Image 1 (cartoon, one colour):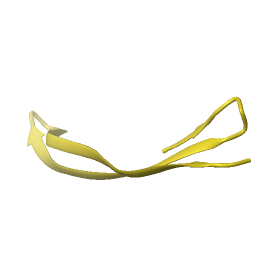
Image 2: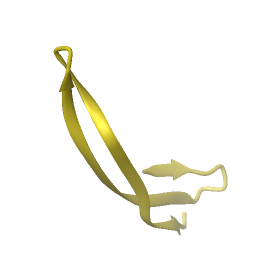
Image 3: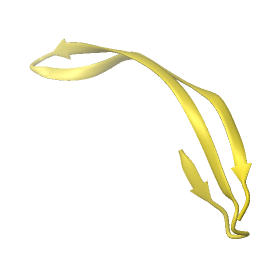
Image 4: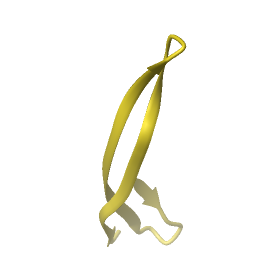
Length: 45
């Protein structure tokens, strides 16, 4: 994830994710997804 701020800095984040796909009624669905922030930092101009 990258988010640019109006002051010229950028917030950069790393995420870790885990999920299972489950087939249901002919469609693939996420089953118990997990998302957590691993790290983040603000980068200068």
